[in-house]
Length: 204
DNA sequence: CCACGGATTGGCT
DNA sequence: GCCAATCCGTGGA
Image (cartoon, rainbow, N blue to C red; front, side, top):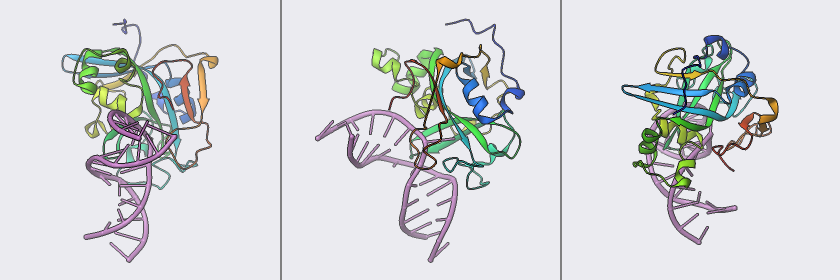
């Protein structure tokens, strides 16, 4: 396990900025989930931005509902939703209060708690090389590996249960920009960002 | 109340 | 590459 001690938790002020800025800067940062006796950690390698003010694919485009209300808070909260009758996806709320913006965490690279993640995903510890790369290479997979569910909806990311550690900002030539995946509206927006050549990005 | 479809995944052709 | 699984948020009657 890599030494995560030198890195500090991202502060509130990181999250309350513009959603596209936060999305790009989240690449390379480390998602942490702490439980009793265990710590799960994964480097964020792929994200997508959603902005309900101009983006028809955002859950907040239709206005405030019970499901999306956390996205209208100021930045620094966790938005978890359930989809396709099977999967959870997790987002980082960004911007100022009432903006309705968030960043979807689409893929991560496991750093710590890999046995726990393996059990959560495949109910076993010994994995083939293919299974290792399949641990967290998609938004539903990240949530399954980290055991992130509806109970984590609305968590404050400046708290001690789920948070993100700072890491040096990536050079722009390490970041690939593309259209978002799996949506039917506002498909042309180039709001997907991922780390060039990383093995854990969701292929497609 | 009912119908529709989704910010996905994994299995099969 | 295609498609079923499977729940629930959302909107219309």
